[in-house]
Image (tube, rainbow, N blue to C red; front, side, top):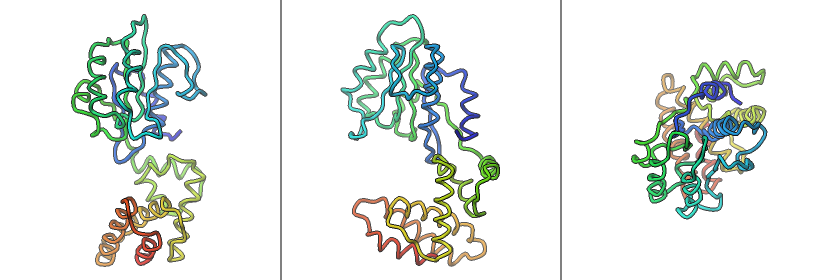
Length: 268
């Protein structure tokens, strides 16, 4: 686990009965939120769930709700069971953990709202989301919002320097401003940044992976921003081109990869 996430988890000893866990700047908080839920149900059941995935925890004090990967959202029909779980009387604490609060529609939240209001302080509802603005204001006004902070640039740099991995100076700068890139294995991150640097040094992008091309575009945008003070005219032109390329990569019916790579190569 990344050191800044571990530091945040160590401070989570007083979770409010109704809490929304969220991040910022595109931060993916799923891993941290799942660890918080796991730690909480461990304390309730007094059982060691350290090596158990949330999906495999069988406890009458715990209900785990997330979107089916084959569906676009969590339909209202799938909220009946968690509502029944919240309504059941209990002599101790219990937890409903919702992973991906942005996947519940307005009608679904409206059906949960009354149950949430009627439940006491021994009933905990934790909603994790990577997009707080997608949560209805009626829910946000009734829940405590806990933000998982983005690490500082210095925190990330200290971690990278202490990792004993070989990163270029530009890679360290990019990663320190984009810590979400470190959510994967550090060895995989090293390989990815080495590949990006090879594209950069060779003056041509050699990839057929759209996701990889998108990531390399982010890297180039970062590098061009560094050059604005010394090469303003060229950097601003390249930035405009790269930002437009980045948008086109994610749009439906977008440009072919060959055209995208040609546009990127013109900025190298």
